[in-house]
Amino acid sequence: MSIHAESAKAIRKELKKAYPTIKFSVTSQSYSGGNSVHVEWVDGPISDEVGKIAYKYQYGHFNGMEDIYENTNIRCDLPQVKYVQIRRTISEDILNQVFESLQQTHAYFDRVFSLDECNNSLNHHWSAWTAREYIHRVLVKLDLTNGYKEQCLEV
Picture 1 (spheres, helix red, strand yellow):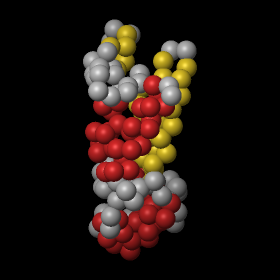
Picture 2: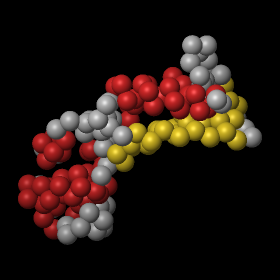
Picture 3: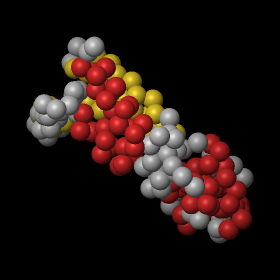
Picture 4: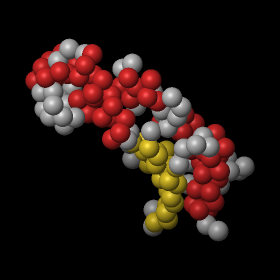
C-alpha cells in the first residue's frame, strides 16, 4: 500500500473513532510533486477539530515568503503526506431552516426572499450580500454533530 493510501486510511480510522455518526470522504492521490489527502464532510464538527486529527499526517508546509516547502512536522510514528486538505460543507437543509428562522426573528431578513438574493440592506446591517453568506459565516463556527437544529435556530 502506498504511503498516501496509508495516511488516508489512518485519518479515516481516527475520524470514525472521534465522530462515529459523521460520514467523511477521505481520498488520497500521488502526483509528480508529492502526494496529498483530501478530507470532506457535510455538517458535523468544525474544521478546527477535524484539522487537529488530520493535519498531523502532513509532514510540513509551504513557505510562500521563501517559495519553498519546509519539513516541519515529520513524525516517524505516522504515515505522512506532503499536503492534507480539509473541507466542510453545510447542508442545504440546515441553511434553509436557519434562513426561515432568521426571516421571522432578525431585522432585514424579512425583506430577503431566497438564500442567494443580493440585498443592500443585509450588506449594510449584517455585512453580507446574501443570506447564505451570513448564515455560512455563523455556522462554520458551530459544531453540527449533535442537536444541530436547536443550535442553528439560535443564530
